Image (cartoon, rainbow, N blue to C red):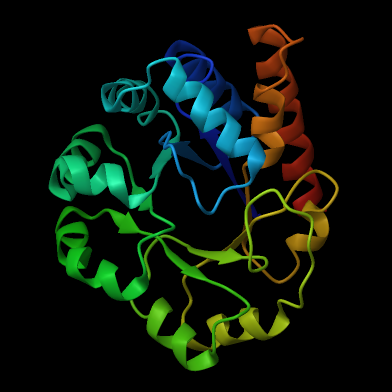
Amino acid sequence: MKKLVAYITTGYPDKEFTVDLALSLKDAGVDSLELGIPFSDPVADGPVIEAANLFALQKGFKISDLLEVSQKIAPHIDTLWMGYFNPFYHKGVDFFLDKAEEFGVSGFIIPDLPHEEAAAYKGAFEERGIALIEFVAPTDTSDRIAKIVKGAKKFIYMVAYAGITGADKSESLVPTIEAVREHTDTPLYIGFGVDEKTAKKRAEGVDGVIVGSAFVRVLLKENLTYAQKIDNISTLARTIKERINE
């Protein structure tokens, strides 16, 4: 059974909605949830997630909101924190690791923390049994992939193309998949550009998919009530889960 990881922006439209949506996604078949930490310059994300980030910040998002939401949902669905390094650095990586260990958050995804710089923090993550998710991309050489995936925990995040999330691009991923498989048995999940139309194709040869923009796009629809947003996103999640396992 291939896995579905869902990204949602924490605190948008509000933290109570985030909790309700997270629990609904669990019931819809989502295996792991990325709680996105709103940031003013999300360099790896496209305009959809960027907009949700900015709206959440304008509504007054604070790290305490992330902690409150995580405490409520982590006992019910596998939860990861996805954010840019600035907030982690500002409050301290150990602060976040301590809270993650307390609440049961299983991993961190930090797209702007290069593999080489992440090495300084690996020991602290391993000590607490929390994964720091590694990224691979079609632009990585086989030798670099071997270095990146050595000791990778939980899953490896494969970027479907060089660019930002939510774009519609296509590159041959077979060489990247083969290089990863050659060096590790850690599950390989693909992200960037995955939605209900592309999920089945994207899931070929990998163990799961990571979906963000397709869900957040629904979050941004002002003509929908909160209940309708949750229902639409959960229905979309069910569809994607079915398609990657056809």
